[in-house]
Image (cartoon, rainbow over all chains, first blue to last red; front, side, top):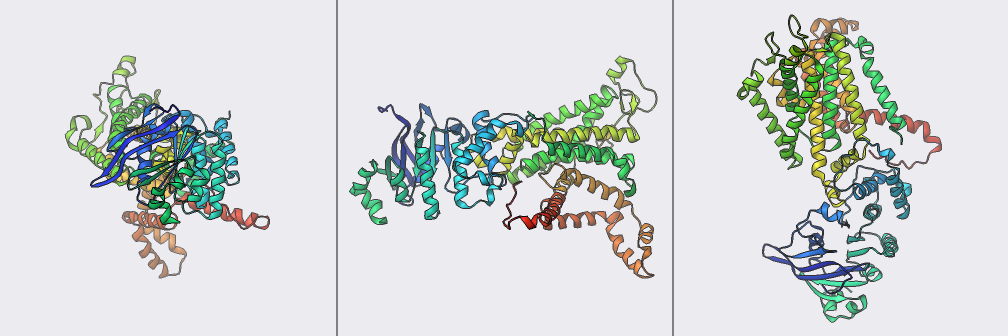
Length: 254
Length: 379
């Protein structure tokens, strides 16, 4: 690794599912503070790559290094405690709990670590965590819905709340799996605005996205994945002009 | 920093008052005698503890009677070996059942859902069979473990407070028979409720709710969920042990049938009937089931004739013929029927019914100055 700014390095990762070579020879370097988009046609291995990074899947070979720490072989909660948060394609939220509690839980994880037997303190006395959660909800424009059950939110709001659940942990790396999938144009645009806002906070982001409008409005760097391999890498303009990319993906889609 | 919010304090005080006044307000229901009241307290504690694992954390154990039984055996052994005083027996029972829960929980919690339930059931049945036959030297098998005149009671002997006559458990030398026994158990139920309330309202309690709601998200949020579930399992096991010990205090005889699967199933019924996940629900469920068991099963045809006596001649006989199927030996039929009705129409148990009624009243009162959009409240 020659570039000192690289915070996430996916090195020589292969992933096989039986005979299927889902990821082949993936080498990906994400620089600190950048928004790095991974695009590619359906079945290119984008989600598999994200699952390997977050520890949901173990790579067949290769390693993932985050800021000097090897992620491969660690459990999802350990990876989170290193400062990596993830937004899922289908929001993973606490549907039975209130919006406020949904956001307080990750804040407690950040403060108290993976396990703490704090059963004598009342939740009411956690004023610091409470204020943090309220400010976060204010930021994403959901303060008015704080007492609603999270399960009764609209799809767009669930995503926004899940994003808030990640942001309250001030992660160093945020992984976003198709954050606007299935959203209306209006919801997509508000999400882009929100993501742009957090871009200025200097957080590193890896984003998987189908929607080219979203990708080109947010990404600093783009890697194009096709059939489990990275076929192109570079700034949005470089990628847009790459004939291989147009053949594999953009040409077909547009 | 407030110790408790105003609502929690009111709930706790209200609960305390209702429990302590039970000998009064249960009089008209014919349930105000010590033996039954003690059982109300004991199974209330059992259900409150079970709810911490099932209602809060979402793990359905079908083997909690094992911890109840272990608590009973441990308490009786304490009476035999240490002292007839109830306090060492309770402490010993809680510690032993806690360790036992740690062991079984550690293995069972490697799985979740139905596999977890089956594992707990298997362990409980194993414990039952061990207690019934293999471990006869410890459990006295079929006969059950009981106190005898020849028990060593080293602590009592050392203190020189040997008792004459048939040994019975005491508290600092005072007898625990009758209403004294009830108030002793009531003190523990109130304490058990208080601790459960604190756990529910603590950050730890919120983590348990998070695990019930979405364990995947908990993992990706940075929580190691294993120790949380194990802690919940051990706490509820200790509650069960405490309840088992209290049963041994009020009636110092421990038998293996306390560990059977029917006993494990009963606490599940109590919790669901009252409302899993609520604080008061499981206690109400326990009270109702024990009430049915003791009162309904004692009703006979003569009493039914008196009850339907106001009906015209002939009609009362028909009613007696019908209702007699649901009382006495047939009270399980009533229990089953009530349970089916609750699960079908009120999946949240009696507490959900209470909430719905309260909601209805609120809406009627507030409807004029309130917009139609009803915000769905969180749990």
